Length: 111
Length: 114
Image 1 (cartoon, rainbow over the protein chains, first blue to last red):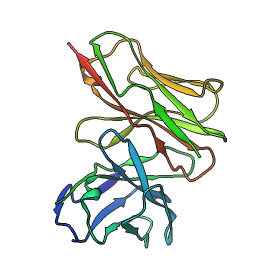
Image 2 (image 1 turned 180 degrees about the vertical axis):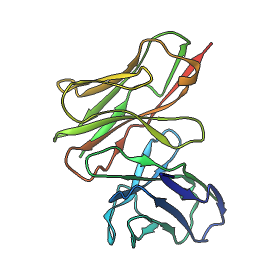
Image 3 (image 1 turned 90 degrees about the vertical axis):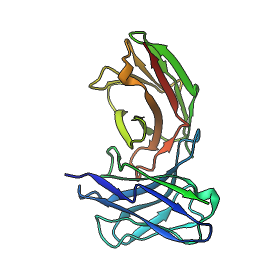
């Protein structure tokens, strides 16, 4: 099993550009999550999903959108990139009541 | 709502010395507790977890943590650290029986020196 995979690994965006961060898991987990990690701040939950077609906001959803059309995929969309969205983004998945498995992360810089 | 406080942002220690990384949480409901480790430029890996049962939980690489409900703490300990333990450690909490939405502490950077 590949576990949780994320693409791209690195990306530089200009202010106002848009992009999609991809996340795929092959463990048949119902729950998937997007976090952002800022220096000294730990991880903050952006959005999560409890199954295909069901998504909900986390702590810091502003400026982001998600969709969940399949169990495996949970893309994160940035519509109008801002410098405040410079961060490392982690996708994770889990079954109910168990640990979360994290992807390797996407390092995004907005200039 | 839940919150997590990791009391030390950095912990320097010499190799083979003991270490304790402190974690306190706040919650009005019962919770699951986790310690995750992040090595440089990598994602997070689960180190150990408390879901129920014995309050002392252990990892395969010598770490242990004890759930103390009265003190709302989940401190991480290792009796003898190695250079390879150098990493960032995150304590996290989620309400038991929920959607596993993790609330993380700010992290503790453990630096093991020879």
